[in-house]
Length: 313
Ligand SMILES: [Zn+2]
Image 1 (cartoon, rainbow, N blue to C red):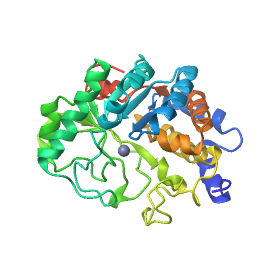
Image 2 (cartoon, helix red, strand yellow):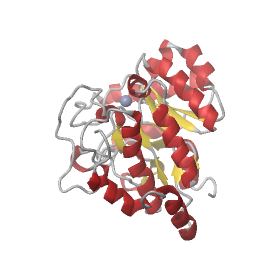
Image 3 (cartoon, rainbow, N blue to C red):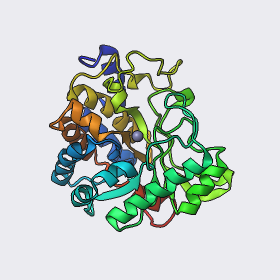
């Protein structure tokens, strides 16, 4: 993608105005009381290259006083526990688990089949244990490797293990319908239908940013849905610059505000962000936009507290 196409420009102008987009959007937001949309910066931290990336990411977060949730793979954490603790042990950050070794907790069309129930148990329990051992604070959230297009619906055995482990929320809905991208702006829900009303699903939204840049080297792939439920969110090609990526992010942020969503959170990976944009310019552009829009930054744990009724917003 080079520049935003005329088609997308026209569409984005419908969402938030032309030229004076931010001012226009803010006026609308203030007049309709929509400014309560929360924004969560979240990172699936899952490979050796993530450590150097997190150093850069943390620097930007501290500069912007922007909270974040780091979903960390147990194996990645155990490879550098002291370094991660030193880097991320900060009141701004929530540390949650991304399982222990990224094995699938249910079948995923792109990432493969689920492992055995015993292995799934180990992924959940060991992942949580690693976070709590290294950071000496409770780990209440789990984002399964890759995520799914139907969250953990109809997976009562997995939900039971999650409950036994003491996990309070999962962030597993990370794809659009029929394993398409982007993941739509879905709201939180609980697993009452499966018999677990106390476990909440707090989805992720947008693209898995690594795929926007072909960082998995999949090349062209059948990834989008037709008819598209969100055509404005489909760039014409792979992102080539941090500005390209920001343009895609903006579509989700503006739409979340415009449609009065309770929150928006994009699916980011430190290794991929660093490989593409080692100065983290995209983060600066995105956080600046979030602040201008008047969104309320928080962590997934804080969103959980709100939706589960632990605190009033
Ligand atoms: Zn992952």
